[in-house]
Image (cartoon, rainbow, N blue to C red; front, side, top):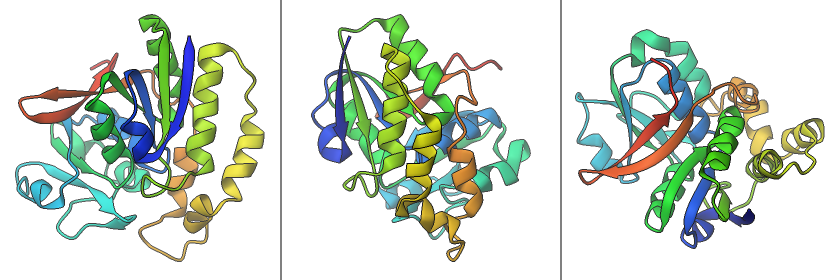
Length: 232
C-alpha cells in the first residue's frame, strides 16, 4: 500500500482513489460525537447562507474562523455537543459547516472514489476500514488551520493513521507534547475566548473512542456523512 501525505485544500484537490481527510480540532471529532448521541443524519455544507435555509428544519452546527456563526444552534465544539447530549441530537438532521474539515471533505469528494473523515477518536476504525478495502494507494490529507496552515494535531494524527496501516512506529506521548505546546492547542488552553473551550482539546486528543467510520457520500445533490459500522 502506497501512502500519499498531503495537506490543506490544495492537497484535498489533488487526491484520487481512497482518501482520509483529517480534522482533529474539531470537525471530525464533532461528527462522531453527534452520531453517538443519536443524530439521524449529518449533511456537509460550506455556504453559510445555504445552511441558514435549514433553520427550523435541522440543527445548524458550525463555525467560521473558529467563531460561532450567528443563527446557528451550536458551535463546532465537542464539549458543547457533549453538554447538550442525546436529548438534543437524537433523531435530528444536522447541517455541519466548518472552515477546514468540511471544505476539505467536499473538495476531496470531487475526485476520490471514497472519502473518509478522520480524527484521533476514529483513527483505528478508519485504518481497519481502509485495510479491508485493500487499496493500492491511500491519501491522508491533514487539513490544518483555515485549510491552509499545517498544524501538529492533524499531521500527527496522520502519522498515527499511517502507523495503524503500515506498522510504522508512533509515539503518542511525544505527539501530545508537540500538539499541546503549539498555538493550535494553546488558543484553547488559555481559556480567554469562549468559542475555544479548554475542554475541546481534551476530547479531541482521545484515541479510538468510536468503532465506526465516517464516509462522505453524495446523494440527491447533497453530501451526507454516513457512519459505517455504527450500531443502533
